[in-house]
Length: 246
Image (cartoon, rainbow, N blue to C red):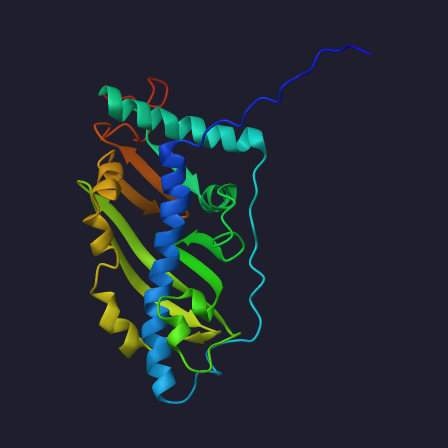
């Protein structure tokens, strides 16, 4: 038997943007749903309905896990954007699916996020479904009767970024299978739920690496700073151009 020993290759460090899109993105979505939840829970609590809108069991949310190779493809694309921003080069826009975002969340191996949030994208909007203990919500441990109970709910939002400024507005939400009434949602719909995050210097620094973040159909399109029109419909080839009749 050989005396040679083999050192395992150290895991590749997650890119800054990968951590941002996974960690910060996940925390933001969880926070957005929590903001709606706390307001609605407080409203319903005043009506003595805390048990109706919470559950004694969590929801079983799907977890999307990519192989190491699939994760590396995402990381490499994100690192290209990161490098281009640092060097002043131009990078291609990046297109992310809901599975990509969920895999980035799962890849963080964060017990506060894994299995507690699931993202979907549809009709130009992003939705986050969450299932967390009530005491994990801001101020949740102050809710009488909330101990040992779970908040299960979701929120759908419109998301856009222009010139480094992120805007997230809630379109609708549900709590424990009950749609949040329109008159309540209307009160928060006018607010940019990430207003405070935009003021954070580190968060703002990351956002400045993008010209735009758009949700188109069922995908998120990240347009790096300085690459404006790279993602366009392909030009017609000579064979596709209709001849002009004399």
